[in-house]
Image (cartoon, rainbow, N blue to C red; front, side, top):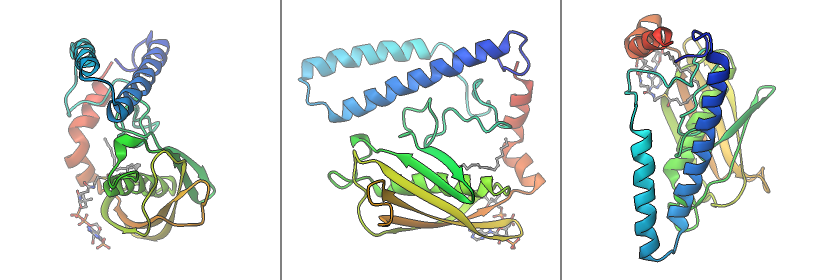
Length: 224
Ligand SMILES: CCCCC/C=C\C/C=C\C/C=C\C/C=C\CCCC(=O)SCCNC(=O)CCNC(=O)[C@H](O)C(C)(C)COP(=O)(O)OP(=O)(O)OC[C@H]1O[C@@H](n2cnc3c(N)ncnc32)[C@H](O)[C@@H]1OP(=O)(O)O
């Protein structure tokens, strides 16, 4: 069901989006606690049963990769299950992004679930955060595209359980190719770069967009 095409849609869509976000909050708390817990095995076994019961409830009706979530709206940029920013995603920290002039600013705190080296973030997580933030900056510049290259320089480990501040900006636009650079720092020491990245993004030709996303796009406009 899609809020734009269903007459009872707007209220239903608002409720569903709220429910998706609330479930996302609960899942993120669950994932973090499941990582941090030192509870006895009895409690782990009981929790496993409860989680399996919740999964059975959610599995009654599911989509596959050829259809968009009914809560999403590509034209409005609503992607509730984006694994970096999505409020409905159990995997997303989530990263909160805002645009200040030509600067894109991201904030998040990574929990123990994102641990790589003890007490620090997994390096792949830093690359994920920066890919998303750079992609947002590129999109905000009016030239959205897909990542074709991401160079990441790890200068110091990124601490967990510590508010982070990420920044990105577009540095060059060359035909269909856009370059953006960004960094991760802590909110307490925003001028000390922990991880820096430069990404190249390519705007899709109409043919490429049709080939890669045509089926999904069609299913989105049919929904309702
Ligand atoms: C339902 C519709 C949805 C539409 C969404 C479309 C785009 C997304 C838009 C907005 C995103 C918004 C927010 C950001 C969100 C998330 C950020 C994360 C982004 C990602 O997570 S995204 C996933 C990972 N990403 C991929 O999955 C890409 C795999 N890739 C390909 O699918 C092809 O690569 C393709 C189709 C992109 C290009 O097709 P191709 O490769 O054939 O290139 P083509 O011939 O078109 O060239 C064009 C110019 O790009 C240059 N070029 C190409 N590759 C280069 C490279 N590596 N380095 C330097 N320059 C390169 C050429 O040299 C030429 O430059 P020049 O014109 O100057 O010669």
